[in-house]
Length: 316
Image (cartoon, rainbow, N blue to C red; front, side, top):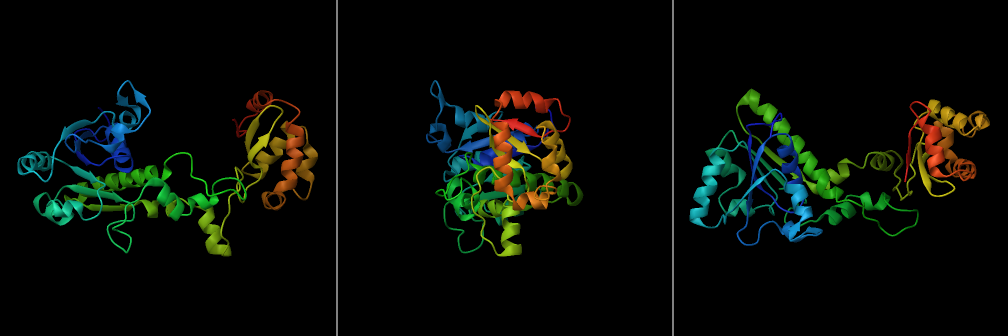
């Protein structure tokens, strides 16, 4: 494929989601990706549904555009083949349990001595160092430990997993970012780099407002449904037939919303005149807006809002 990473060779020792998502991005950017799979077993996700005939659509969606070869890295002959591939590679990506590749003779120190220009990226649950490094991790584990599940769901609901595997995907994105930064650095230094990505670290890194509230107010954030904790109106509202998402991220947009709803008096109410005031009176504001929005169906409101430039809306 053409792309900014064309002519780069990536050796992909990953499986399931976090690693394959990273190498999928590299492939989409033009790199040639050779996926190394265990003989007879292959990537675990080959057995994950949904299926198209006998093929996993899940596996295909993450490994499109890649090449695959089955090698047993404990076997001497297979190691020779792997070494030939590695000698031509620019990047190695792996998501084994920390220490596994060292046992097989393919740890960072060994690889860096033989192939000093190779970029070596490891994605794991808890990183290559620290007290948790030996523990395995799946997406839901790091969503829970990272605090994301504590802010997801409706008020007073049970811990709720985000509806997509964001623990894996976020780590895959950070790994791809690290690899691209290392490629840029190699242009200047001529040397490879080791990249250590922890899924748990990545979950904490994306907590944004939640972790800011915790650090500044010593407040443990709770689930708020679709509501934003410090911007209003910024959530899902009931209409006559379903819901509409309204995100008025500043005072000018709120004034525009009031005009669209033919409620200019709202903008002059001291409780709603600026975002700080609206955030303090979210419940009152929601009731007033929903009383108005329930008059029409979602599509009617969407058509009305579409006419207004820079209105932020979405229907669900």
